[in-house]
Length: 225
Image (cartoon, rainbow, N blue to C red; front, side):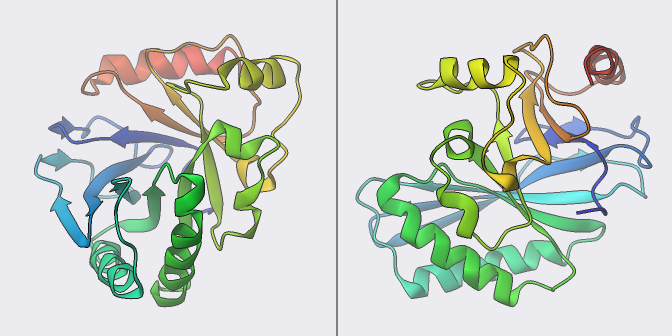
C-alpha cells in the first residue's frame, strides 16, 4: 500500500480535469467500470467520461459492483468480472485496484470467492483495496478473512448505524477491524470536527474537483489530522 499516496481524490463518473494536483502527494482513485449482476447476466459499463491527470499521478482503478436481489452468481460470472478488472490493472500508472461493493449478507460468500480469484490472478505487487460500510468495521468483522490489503470505512451517507459510528470515533475509539485502521473515506459535503490521524484519506467530491476546492479541503483536513 506504500505506492498509494496518503491523500487520494475519488474521480467518479463525470469529466474531471485534475492536472492541477501535485502527483507526489496526491493520488487519484477513478471509477474505471461499473459492473451489474442482473439475473443470470453480467453487464459491464466502462468509464465514459474523460479524466486528465499529471503524467506522474499514481492511479487506483475503482470497480463499482452492483447486484440485483435476484442476481445469480456463478464461477463463470466471477471469472468474467475478474477478467474485466485485470484489463484495468494494465492501464498506465495504475498502482492499485479498489472494489466498491455494498455486499449484503447473502452476497458475502460470492464476494469472498470473487476476491480470492482476483488476488490469485492479479499481479502480486498490485494491492487490492475495498470500500467498506462503516458497520463492517465495528462489531461485524466479517471482512477480516478477505484477501485484501485495505478496507476503506465509508464515513458519509452511512444511513442506519450512523450514530454508533459517530459515537465510536468521537470517543476516540478505533474500528475493531484491523483492515479498517489504515484509511478513511470522507466526503466534501459531510463535515467531521475530527477523525483519527495518520491515515490515508480518500475524498469524494459533491461536484467536480477544482484547484480551489482541493486546496480548501486540504486546509480543513489539516486542522484535525
